[in-house]
Length: 112
Image 1 (cartoon, rainbow, N blue to C red):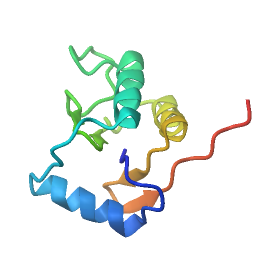
Image 2: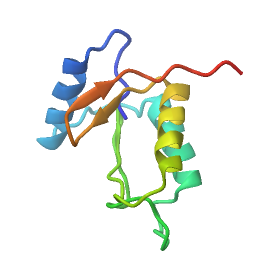
Image 3: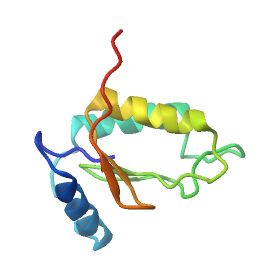
Image 4: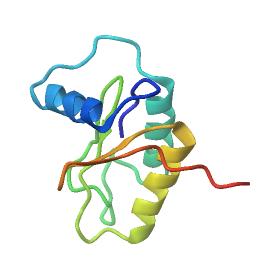
């Protein structure tokens, strides 16, 4: 999940991911969208302590000021993915799929 400026492109996300992989993180206050996402996803699926039914392959989650990296257990339930997508949409976050490098804009909010 990435919190980038409005109008960010998939290439902007890939560049940010590469900087993260190189250990370069922005020195700024955490983006409120990232904080809200992290709190919501870990309230539903705790990453500290990790329980026996955790969806996380790697825990705790890697959280920085502008992103949260989640490595999912391949056997996790589909509901986990649906919750991630919903929370990304609610918080205006872009999704990056590390498996194939795809970038998805924030999912549209469902009419309530």
